Amino acid sequence: MNAPSPFSASLPDSKTINRAVIAKAAEWMARLWSGEASEKEKAACADWRASHPDHERAWQELQVFEDKLDGLPHEIAHHVLREPADQAWRKRNRTRRLFGLAIVLGGAGCLLRNSDMWQRRTADYATSTGEIRTINLADGTQIVLATSTMIDVRFDAQERRIVLHAGEVLITTAPDPASIHRPFRVHDRHGSVEALGTRFSVRQDESASQVAVFEGMVALRSSHKPDVAIHIRAGEGCRYSTERIAPVTQVQESAVAWRNGVLLAENMRVADFVAELARYRPGLLRCDPVIAELRVSGVFSLRDTDRALQNLALALPIVPVYRSRYWVTLQPA
Figure 1 (cartoon, rainbow, N blue to C red):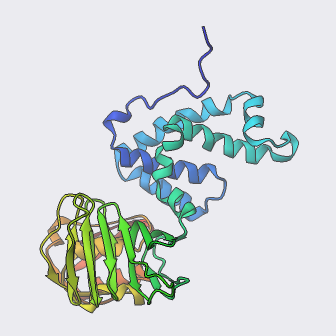
Figure 2: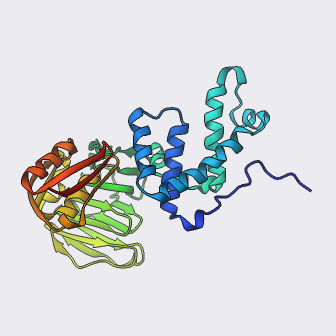
Figure 3: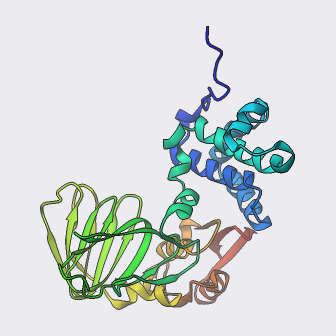
């Protein structure tokens, strides 16, 4: 009988825990195991674990593999890293754990590869939480990346393609310098947007994406019906998923005020305000349902979210309650 693989293992009760929670736990664990985590990241991890019982449960179920990985034969670790033990023990120990965690969670297709951390490190261009970045492509196109955004750039002889893995981009296209015209397209998990000489934004959320056009026009196609195009003109926007394209609505320039590091609220629900501000802030930000329907208008900083919360509290009968820097709840004053 063949000896069992040292990596043969499964998460005991993972079927009862949301896959996204397991993926997040794996991301935190990989970050801490890397040996590069800052004190702030360690605190954020602790806050995440404490924020819901399933978070701690997923963490503990992954933690049991640390002892298994610590017991791996020296020859296996040496084969993986091919470095002398007296020169790279600490590096090997970290990599051994990450390697083992990857196999435990499903090999090359494991959840770590779907995590934000993995995608940020492998994407052509990426931003961290709260970061806003402008890049200029070889054809003269300008792209502004919002918080937690990851894109790949794929230019070839047939097309200029941007793959949006996560987040939001504001794109100002330039005329194609190639002798043969190449269409400029943005692809995400829900569909594709083809620019027809334009300035537009695309935002991808978990269940749907949103396109907004500020100059020119785009052709929108859902991934379910790639042969059917809907034309969206300047001043219009549309939400789309893999299954359907919603009716076209009007959009304002304020929709991309984030490019200047501000959130422009116009009679916005507090619940929506919190959801938007949370995208630019590490950790957990939420509001009490009692105040969720209150309305707010004003200009708020996305670069200093604590200041934004203070200004919100000045405008409304609300108080931010800090359990930690990374766990804040808005409650009635």
